[in-house]
Amino acid sequence: MSWLWTTEDMIAAMAGRPFGTLPEGITGISIDSRSITPGEAFFAIKGDRVDGHDYASTANGASLLVVSEARLPAMGRLTVPMIVVEDVLAALGRLGLASRERSRARIIAVTGSVGKTTTKEMLRHVLSPSGKVHASVASFNNHWGVPLTLARMPEDTDYGVFEVGMNHPGEIRPLVGMIRPDVAIVTTIAPAHLGNFKNIKEIAAAKAEIFEGLEPGGHVVLNRDNDQFNFLDRTAQSLGIEHIHSFGQHAKAEFRLAEFNGSDENSTLWLTIGGETLEVALGAPGRHIAENALAALGVVRIVGADMQKAIEALATLRPEKGRGKRHRLLIGGGSFTLIDESYNANPASMRAAIALLAASEPTGRGRRIAVLGDMLEMGEYAQKVHTDLAVPLLAAGIEHVWMAGAEMAALKESLPESVQVEYRENTDELTDYVLNSVAPGDVLMVKSSLGIGFGKIVAALLDKFPAFADTQREF
Image 1 (cartoon, one colour):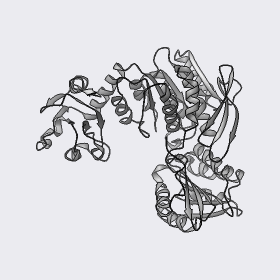
Image 2 (cartoon, rainbow, N blue to C red):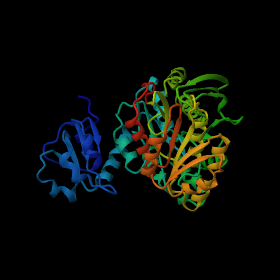
Image 3 (cartoon, rainbow, N blue to C red):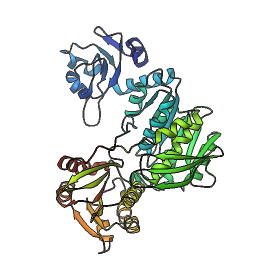
Image 4 (cartoon, rainbow, N blue to C red):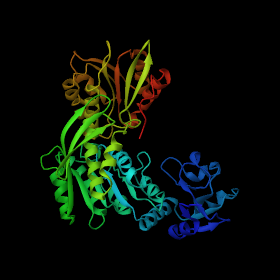
């Protein structure tokens, strides 16, 4: 049996004590009692809303439980063996540190205001032909997601890819201290979570914390087209980092976008790297995806993976759920296209999604329709950033905008009469309107911050209208 961890090593790493007759080892780790598979350990983490100890009895199939000393008396009726620790989340962190210590993998960490998850998944995709890749699940990029991903990393991993997120200053520093990357990527700096910062420079400074955990001799990869490039470059240099790389269209970018040709289903880019220009077919549309590909292929070069196999892999890339995944759905003897951008939103990602909609061709009498919801955590800038969306919408020629949310009222007032606007106060009301108003030939792009819940609109459309063909698959 190939164990992820032996229980002996777990106990030593977590400073725990055994309770009951423990198995020799575990095959995996879960913090969700609903998704336990036989052989895994269930870590009863106490979160902001729920306490995993309350669900320990439903972790059917778990080989062992990791529980806190304080809650052990309440576990009295359970017969599953346990490792008892003072604090479960802290114990998971210690196990993550032990995982990093034992690993010989090349470790890559990704942060940025936009494109973290897409770039992380792209790296998983392009590195897989060259070795065993372990990467964060979904957007596991916070104070529990990072240690969980580390603790789940098999010892024989060749490439580890980690996403690092933040909402406030100081949140990246402890996470990157655990990850200790060999390569750190900053995808871009944009006004995300702007309500928690004074200005864009503060956001850049918070993202630059990723440099502090870099391994000696490590590499940094920066977006040369971003206004904060010089600040990030200087910050990295001030920390003694010698290997600083850049990507983008800028003439001085090391991994340079020489040309881009996009359609509504896929795209082609020409990458200048190491003195040669390579043609790269992408199985996903959008210039922003092409820019992420520059960074990913740059990492392939840095870590010495197979470039040709990486390029071939990009041809099979597909957008994932909530991040540009396309669905062609049947309606009234025809079909319409749904672009699911519902996972999250900030001003930069809104503009990228609007550009994606603009590049998509309706059929027949179909319309391009932007279905937009509030961008959260904008603070005192909320009204301005929503009003400013009128500029890219008008520039893209989008004539139909359906929206919901308190902040979107500002955009409603700023759009001219030439744009057909439908506004509803909440997601449920807009969902009803969308379901009854979409028509054959339309292209709908659905975009909002996650907390607004526009995923409901996508789910309702997928539930009501059958798929035309399953031509798209996720990463």
